[in-house]
Length: 110
Length: 114
Image 1: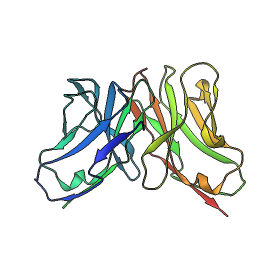
Image 2: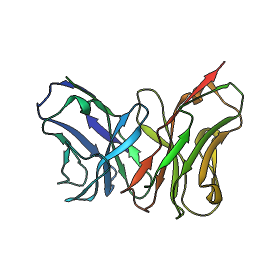
Image 3: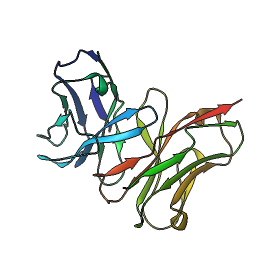
Image 4: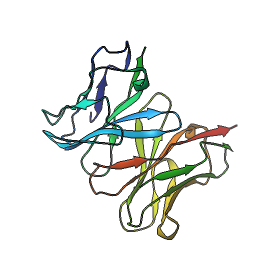
């Protein structure tokens, strides 16, 4: 089944404790992105990647890191999480302009 | 700055009534336009998209949208609402043929009254 998977789906952590949210797609898509969804703000792009080892900042990259060492994986790293990063996070992959979204990761930073 | 505006954060209609969700974007260049739907506790899925060609686009579940360049709008409609249409709807716009840069609207929550 073609899909985008994210892990974990739910995460509660404390300020400053490094965490990684994994994202994997099995559709051989070149493009992958990370978004955060906050009430009233819609989805805002954090980072995107156009291919292996090619990444670029989106609209809200501060406090986040990404890497793209393999085509299928695009992990999101929060090296020192803060409460303002509490949000719902979505990974997406795409072959061209249409995006395919993962199920989301709900993060709470205390 | 490029932006997408969805008028109305919450729209409520009766079952069987017309659904109209509004979306306007800021651009002088014809973009790529999308509507995505998000059901509770799920990710977003594509409802329909406009890239080139016919400006009236049909999507899944009986939805359609019309690209009006002169009005910079891409409103979503459905002639007869069904209870299963209750969800959050996002308009999105891309100024590139790739998915490298897409801007989403703030979303409209659609409620259906029995």
